[in-house]
Image (cartoon, rainbow, N blue to C red):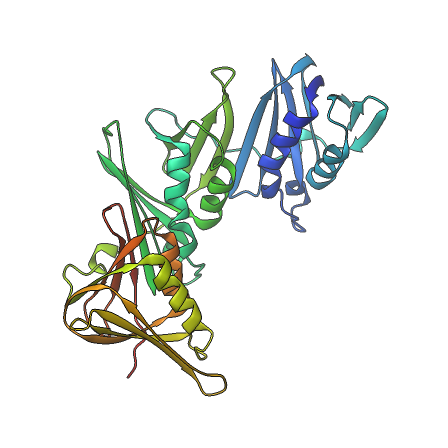
Length: 374
């Protein structure tokens, strides 16, 4: 292998794939990057056996070939080199890197030892705006919580319907659902559970890239693809295994009616909840007392060792008066995911699920369980 590529481009590719090459004591081969020169492209590949990422960039390839080298060493070295073109050449099991007066030799390994990324059928695909998809995923994926007893709620549930897709996550105490409406109807419907780590990497890798993202399915794997702007060739492939099992019937958790509805300023609500959280106790409890007649919400917290807090928030309130308690972290997390200036807060009882929604939009909702006071 012998090729030439700009330092800036190679550095961008390494940053895209290196996070997956985590330090593994049981399988040291996973700490490496597979570098391949082929036709007019260089490709970089990493995997942790659950997720695999391959990045392509245009390069001047004089001789095709491949080698695997330690990811962290390569990343640190390229970062420190000057902003010039780099020459990469494989010599036996060494990677020679030249840049002006700089010359390095990295001891590599046999590329045949590197795991092969699984192939995903590309018969039917969904095409979405990449930034829109990543923003939607970021509103949901952090809610999921690792669970050995219930692995199905460790991931993100995707439900692809003919004209929309739903992205859902829950940890049993709260739930988020985001809808994206499709411009091209699907011929088939799908549902799957994506690991949380894969969702986080999708947001990290694709969120700042303009253009479309393509999604391909297979029974056990899913592929996310973006294209190079210079030519009709993939730039990034992210492949992830899927979590087996059935996601809970989450629709049964979402209240179908409410006893009290409040419209509030999102930022004011967040600020007062955060202030109250400073005085909350071991269970992170913040109490809300809703008064429809005075059209205000009282926010109260108390800690015997610190003191107490009380504030009032005006709002448009209809329905019954109610007193209810929440974990302030869960409440704040839901509010921060909402993008509109005002929020709708719907309550169904002191011990029943509550719903937060953006005012004027119907594509997102957040369900949070109250703290039982009895």
